[in-house]
Length: 274
Image 1 (cartoon, rainbow, N blue to C red):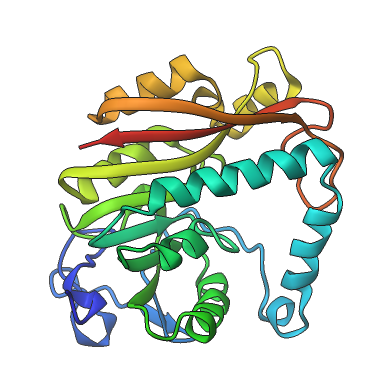
Image 2: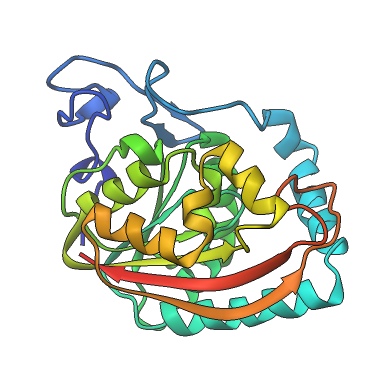
């Protein structure tokens, strides 16, 4: 088991080793720590957009948003989300070793990973260090005996060394990151040989308005099966499977701009291997 997250990170710009003080030993770039979370996003090359402010976490706005999101689920979506949660628990139950949960947002697959019987060591990754600081506090309260770290990183310029993770997971990460091809290529690079990619994902009919909105955002190729298979193959993954778990019509939800109300969401599990 690694003792220090610095053992596995790298500079996202020059790929050099990160030393004490979060300074790259090769190019000299310095990185910061936010609420104890290493922030390895380079301002010139990273994709970060300011979504959250510190006051949002201090005033409980994040918890309110989560509750608002759940409140607007229609019965079909609520049932589909529960089916997806059960599928995630089954798929993550046998994961072991060192795992990165990427584009984790306000939770990702962390609850399932931290409750997994094999007790994997988990690194939560998101581009926003404030989100990670908030998550770390929740994890430490609920799972005080688990090995857990958090690192802020752009998924397209993944601040981790080659071949360090036994598994990479993500919950709707491809819908959160502009640049599906770069996302998948970086995840494969960071996996050990034989490592596992596990995605909880959503798909849509190419004729739907949500699919067209995904085209504007730049992640539409991942929203249908053939496109996803092509992305995985191009990144070098093998033995890919895409398993449907449930589907449901999406209701209008002020807490989420995507997808578009009325469109059918297909809840799928995507699995592939390096």
